[in-house]
Length: 178
Image: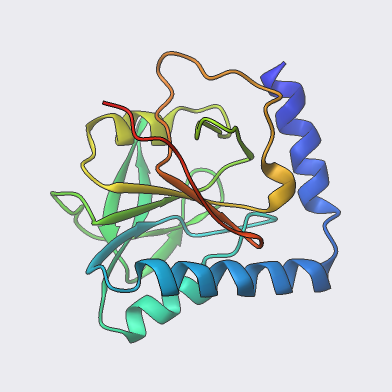
């Protein structure tokens, strides 16, 4: 079920028109900077392919003198590494070189294929972000497009919920869990 939904949403993202995508990415970046720009540190995915673009957000944060960290895979985990020199990682995504950051950023920005109305995301199936977020003391924000909001999946016990989701239509906030 989840694998079928993953494939369906990858196809939807691939055929999301370039003009619509550019406008959606601009709106997402604007919402993000307006809402979270006052924070000091950010752990943010380095978008590739058809993911909601993070390049403009990363550029704006760096220009504002914020601390920006990108993920790097290490075995079955991801670590936050200060933005800098990049090299292709195991999944073909540009990852930062250098020593990992020991701590948690104020805001963690997470990729997704889908998000449900309870704030749980459907990722790519490796569990990297769920393992990281389980221990992280950070605001968890997903980025994507409005067509990625769906209740077509149920979360698993190990899934870590988002606090908020940003798409071209605005910011969705989810109920806090204790």
